[in-house]
Image (tube, rainbow, N blue to C red):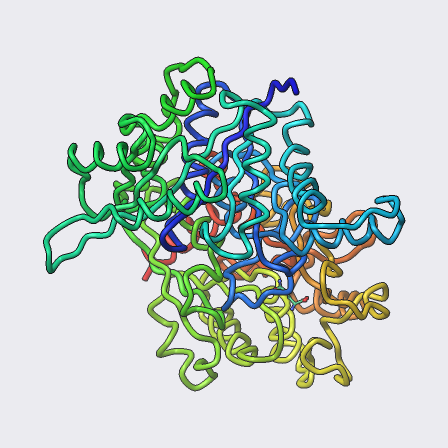
Length: 538
Ligand code: GLN
């Protein structure tokens, strides 16, 4: 088989949560800045067809691509690091693999053969891995295999990797195995045994690791590296230390210092160039040396979990660096918020973001937050459900439509200012059926948002079922809340704002998905700026 695309597989051992996604994204960055067109793909061994149906408590945020795929949050890291959009092809689950094999079987495509894990499931996995490579768009495809080697669910993936390495040849496909080297404080020692075992587990499936990336809290001494090299069949230079970093954005530089890119390029018979990290380091410099700080309240119901609002938190890091301020994000649980304690909970904040979400729990708290910041001139940013809450609050408290609601929360409401689109009414299946992916939006001249975006035609990513109800538009606008962005074809309202307020913007889409290190999202940048101004005025 001839190939021009090189493949790098990233597997994990010992434990989960070692940060395979960040290692993959950091390596991709180092290859990208040496001129290699690089993309990253995540294979997830669970049976859900996509993470769209998963509770954020289970799996963190669901990330959405331009083409409307509901994907794993690691794809967010890939985009934030590389500034290149991902797509449906960048995230594949076991559920999707089986779904397509079973559909083929039903169509009779296997011509009477018995359909088996090997070769049918593994062939489907191999095809999915090569879709990106065969597109001609990339020199290097990095495929991150979710889970940990040795898991029952991972076996078909590891087998597919073994076959691909064989098919493509050693200099076209390599395996990076990420493991943990734990420190036992009682013994005062770093331990290599778990890594040895996990490399062995990989070998039992016929896969040799080419490179070991070892997560560690302490520097790996020279003799420990040699020991690992010897026991695990890798060269000493291919034992890479990945020490805990204060920010994920340090990892590309840490990997550069360790020479991960050099080892990878050598193994793949590719030339090394001097990596140009100027832009990246400029961002880091600003991120690490803020001139001042602000505190933003994040009102949501999954606030205990960092991963649930991952892209929002990262977008604040990008926007903070752009403004040279440190953005402290204070989580406020919407269920504990009401009109009586809103002042105590919110008055010290420099800005308030009401988060996306689903279902009724916590929404009255979100509405109280909007009321408080609207009346007290605190900068407000509402995203998706947050925008919907801003519309409901305005209808209830300014228009005096006291029972105004979203038909998501009260299907019987007499005043559904937020309601289900006609085409959504007949949908019964939950997976992949929302308004998803990039949709065009036209901005009104002279609006806050037109000034922020510096254009009147934008494209942003969506993930919702309910919409601003245009029946109420004239009434709402007459009272001072303007619909300043709408879809040019359907007329659906995408943005509302209050021109009389210092900064009050609600968007039906998710700007956070498109914020990257080299392209901080203009709305986050403007919101941080407004919060800074508010702080100075206080
Ligand atoms: N639950 C709301 C809807 O479906 C908002 C979704 C969201 O915030 N992503 O329309």
